[in-house]
Length: 329
Image (cartoon, rainbow, N blue to C red; front, side):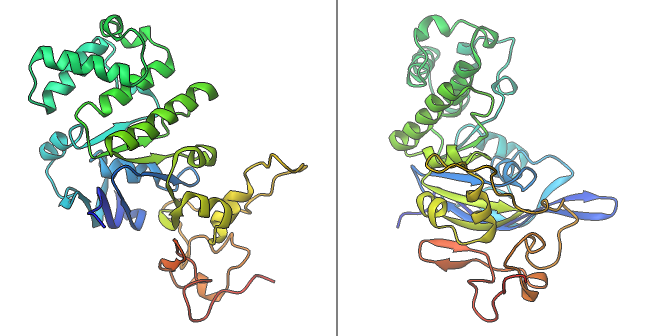
């Protein structure tokens, strides 16, 4: 197997407070291969976006990486200084955020922003950079790129602005792109076009894409694998088809049951009892055990480690050997 485009090893993130470090991510590990789309799902506050920000070096104080490491094509990048991370960001790691207006300068034309990004990271003349900017807009699905190059962000629709952000993200042909809820603010038809564009980029450029989302429909449409995060911990990861149709972890099963069926009529969708604990209020043992219908005594005292179940890795005592959890009576 070739080296992973990105590898995260036992990543932990804390926020420093007056009462001491507040854990937000606890020992997450995963890999991404070139050309792969990895979906990251979980409830709001689970740590999805925080993980993405750590990968692209945008963690803001008081947040910091407290343990673990991040490796890009074998190079450790989490311990680089801010200037080295800035040079890396855009050239080898691209980012696509939920609101494209936060990524675009309203006072610069789209062309100037693209050309500046290209020339910052690639040794190109102004003419060559302009031609690449035209090619990128065309690849992103923007018609008449020569005229659109001269326009400002406010002259584009939301979907077109997101395409421009994608063009900026791939301008230097990065190894990895972190896409954080890139289609949330778009209507369904535009959303489908953006997802198809991301899928094509992964296939044609060999770019590894980490897609952060709460929408399982988006995951089913585009992802190769899916990682499920709960309260800062990775509870299940594996091929998208197996996670969607044969999930093992009780939390993942609960998430899958919330997806409406097109083939059967249901008066009410099932719910996962309770709510996710806030950072600093994680219970002992498995964080999900207060809400889990299959929790047993071991779940309240011991944090489960990932266990290989066919093509899945599942962090649950039901599969970890020894004394397993028993369903609640």
